Every structure is written in C-alpha cells, then in structure tokens.
Amino acid sequence: MAFENPSEQFSGEESFKNIRLVFSQAAPESGVITLKITSENLFYGAEADFTTEPEAVNGIIQIPVVKGSAESFLKLNKFAEILPGEEKGLQLEIESVALQKFHAFAQGNTETIISFSETAALGGAMNPEVGGPNQPNQVYVNLNTKSETKIRRDTWDFGFYSGDDFHVKLNSSLYMFARPLSFYDIDDVREADVVALKPWMNFLLAGSEKFMDHPSGDLNKLAIKPIAESDDENPVYLVKMGNEIGTDIPAPGSVAVAGKDRGWKKIRILRRGNDYLFQYADVNSNSHHEVLISKEDTFNFTFFSISNGKVSVEPARQNWTLNFTVTMEIEPLPEGPDTAYGFSDYVKINSLGNVKAYRVSTSDYTYTDFTENQIEESKFSADERIIGSSWRKATPPERELITDIFYVIKDAQNHYYKLRFTALENENGLRGYPAFEYKLLK
Image 1 (cartoon, rainbow, N blue to C red):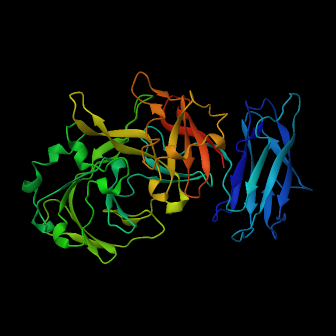
Image 2 (image 1 turned 90 degrees about the vertical axis):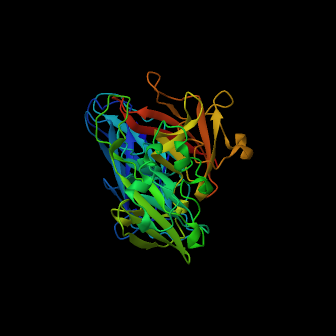
Image 3 (image 1 turned 30 degrees about the vertical axis):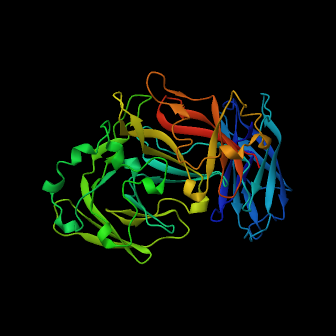
C-alpha cells in the first residue's frame, strides 16, 4: 500500500482534498491503515486550521481497508487562511498496515507532503479527463499545483488575444477553417460569393492548411490575419464552423471525435480602442450581429461563442502548463503538397504563458536517472507542438504508447519537471484515457 502521490497542494480556492492510498491488489479482507500526521505551523480542529475524516487522535489516524477494494481515502478539510509568503503544511506517514489474516505492507510513497501554501508540487501521476474516444473535453493541466481544469471543447468558437497586439484564433479542436474574402462590408456577402470557395476548406485537400491556424501557436500564422488599426484593412472572412463533438461509439483503439457539420458563418473583426468589435452573421444574411470584446489582462485570450456569448475556457495565463485536446495539424499528402488534418490525443504547451519544453531520448538518459544536472537550457522550445502527438502512435495496427522518449518542461514560475506518458488507452483498449507521471527537478 502507498500514497498515490508524494505530494499534494491546496490551490487558493480549495477547501478540502481527498488523499488517495492505493493498493497493489484488491484487499482480500478488511483491515486498518495507521497514519501518523505531523503539521508545520498548523493546528488541528474545526476552530483552527484543518480537520480529517476519519478524525485524528493524538496525531494518529485510522483509515479503514474495505475487503475487495484497491484503494482507501483520507479527507483533509482546510480552514486556514494562508498569507503570501507563509509556509504551512503537513506530512502524512504510513506507520502500519494490518489485515486480519493476510500480510500487508507499505512500499513506494509511504509518506506524502500536503502543502497549504503556493509551492510547487513534487510530482506524481495524473489522468487528464479527456472523456474517452469522443474526446469531448479540453483539459488544462497545471503541473505546479497538480490540478486540472476541463471544459467541453464546443464551449467556444473564437479566442481574442489579450496581449498588446490584436489576434483572433479559431477553435481548432472543432476543425474550424477561415478564409479572407474581397469584401469589406459584411452585409454585402451572399452565398453565391462563397459557394466556390467552400470545397477548398477540407482535410486531405492540397493547400487547405492555408486556411487553418498554424499548429505551432505562432500568433502571426493564424488563419485570421492580425487585426489592423484601420477598418479598411480588415476584410470579411468566410468561416467553416467545423464539427460538433462526435457521439458514435468507435471500435477499441479508434476515436470518433467529429460529429455533425456546424455550418458556415461570415465574420469581420475591427479594433475599437483596446477592444475588438466582432461582427458575425449567417452567410446569406443582409444584416449582422455586433459585440464588443474586451481584453482580459491575466488571460491569454477572451473566448466567445456565437451561441452563448462570452465564455470561460482557459485558466489564467500563469495557471496552466499543458492542454490535452483534439486539434488540427499540417500533414504531407502522398503526392507531395501539404494539407490540413485532424489529430486526437494531442498535447500543447502554454507557450504564451512562457512554458517551454524539449524531448529527451532514453538512449541518452533514462527517465529514472535524469536529474537537474542534465537539463540543457538551449534545447527548450516554445513551439506548442513540442509534445504534440510525439508521445503516441495511433495508426493501426501499430497503435502504441511511445516509451523511448520523455519530456523536460519549464513552467511559468521557472520550475523544471521531467514527464513521461504511461497510458494512451484504458484497460479495455479505449482511446481518450491518457495518463502520465512527472517529477519536480528544481
């Protein structure tokens, strides 16, 4: 038996945590795990800083082991208010494991450190909730706090950049395309003006990558060009809205991420001071909707949905490291030219949040032995694709997890981690159940 993770951390808004203890096999009978709790600058009790469920008595907690179960939990309730710069936390240690007849013992993470302060997590294992073979969720992982934020990937359509410049990105997880037109009044565009253009905005078609956001994350390579200060320089765009989230049940090892076609829109984006003026309409409409969209300084983007208006998607710029998502990539066709193509099981780094990473081959270093002394600063890349799809092979029949590489990641707080993937599928061979482990290097 062991703690699932060597460390846990409370984020500012969390009031409790379930600390998981895992077993190497299902318990053959009931029993008890005895934990010793040692606190630093914290006091036990509902009128003090924290409590536990089950209750601690003189620093000792008895956790029941249920016959047939492969895990137990301790609930840790937080009441303490932590001020900036304060270091408060506690340590849990497995003192003994007692079953009625069988022998049981603790091995591996026999201790775990619980931080109530904003310190970097030591690492551990994570299973981002992508949602199975339809992969309905985009999952934002924060390695620093060992936490994740998930949203349905059809929550948003457009992302409006919050930095000094003016850029607008498409929701590539829905396979969206955009193409500039020779019109500068959105109400002038009709179906007859664009019908010949629509077939060119598709996968497996030479040149279609010109109408997608570049997968590197380079803001100057988006399908929608930088928004100019002069209205006369901002054209109307034809937008293919992509696909709904798939609902089919695919065969094991396959995915079904793309559902029904979401149709087409025409849009135009202008600048109004430090805000965006977003115009949108159905292609054949002679009128349009307008909305003023303001930048949000602490976020990479402000997100907007034509169906739901302004929506919350990403965590704040400094509060996420990796994004697990469906996306679009550029692939060469057999005859030579490039094309747009859809990818599942994809991982982006938060390059706009100053996250960088590089790959390490196990022929150079093993994951286990890699230390902070082997970090090579010159290898770090801000390309969003540096992890991308390189951690797995999804082409039948050779679908597999790539085990001969791992990654070194530098986050926004200048913490360094090593990370390797441990699963592409679940125990039933279904995609959309990724898992990884990571460890703080410094």
